[in-house]
Length: 207
Image 1 (cartoon, rainbow, N blue to C red):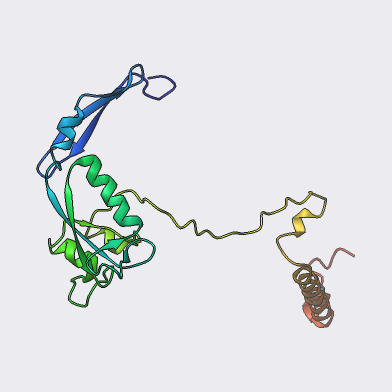
Image 2 (spheres, rainbow, N blue to C red):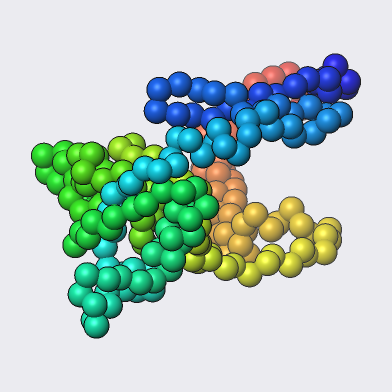
């Protein structure tokens, strides 16, 4: 330990298969990342297999080719072609009408339903990652983000002065508080003047 932190340790890099976890490599501070699994072993889990890919038409991800009714093109199609070429597998497209929404009976339709019901191996398209979907399927890392953000004005720091303690309340509130204090004080003074108990000396012997 160095200053409360571990510095001499080793991490095992694992990859998950359908049945078990396998060690793919190690990492330590001195040697860095070291893969012990060769690329041939890494490709055996998908090499030569055929996968059913569920998707739906949405531009520019999946676009229907009007000249060839059975052909589609777009960003997701090209991405799948590149992955299939790199990992040596084939795929077949299964078209859906929607991305998938939960039904009243707890089931899903569209792409989500095909994955849950094991009618497809992979789902791809304009799929937004949310909590409901994460509970029923596993997502990869996003390959595209929209970049939608909320912008607010950066606050400008104000210079401190002697009256900074008045800042928590507005000027109207301070005026009302002072006016209420004066009114209550005046009413107590008037009541005390008319009250006979205020004129009684508790120590009559003292002038």
